[in-house]
Image (cartoon, rainbow, N blue to C red):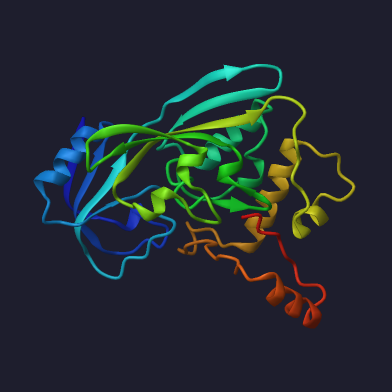
Length: 263
């Protein structure tokens, strides 16, 4: 099923609440229909959007905004150690994190309260507090809008690096339809070495729920509520420098925080 809206207000489609319109808004749960619509309107640019937290419109969008609707949620495997969970791209990421923790499945908790959808998560390999999407993603399912074929990308094929992936470099070609996560079912490995998080959890017995709540508290205190103050949230990238350059910086600023790049 495909829904097409003309001259659609985009204030509800992005966290800046920009007061503009898009020429077309297309919503569908069928990627083939989306590909055909794009082909029919090949003279127009198009943009696949999720939660709209990394978008800033400065004028009307004379093109096609695309929202893919897929809310599947399927357990593919479960044993004493692991849960493999396939999730439709349209789910709100934080809702899935909450669902995972309610079932005592670990791995996603450090990404709590990151805005956006599950489908947007692999595009820039989102990360926070020492955990990145690549640490929990087993497979990304996508539809190739150019060749009109379905494709499955394992972790290696995703080419994940710091805030980067194959999807970011081919943006607009691949419509992500689902993400498959590998989560821990027991013996969770907690990532709490990040300075602010470590301090927040001092003298507390570690659990998935405690870590999630600590991160929610930190993010809530640092970032304004987009429903009250329209904003794009946190979207910075840490600089990657040579070891020589870092050692020089460390001489000047002994307490400088750092993370090793293992690439």
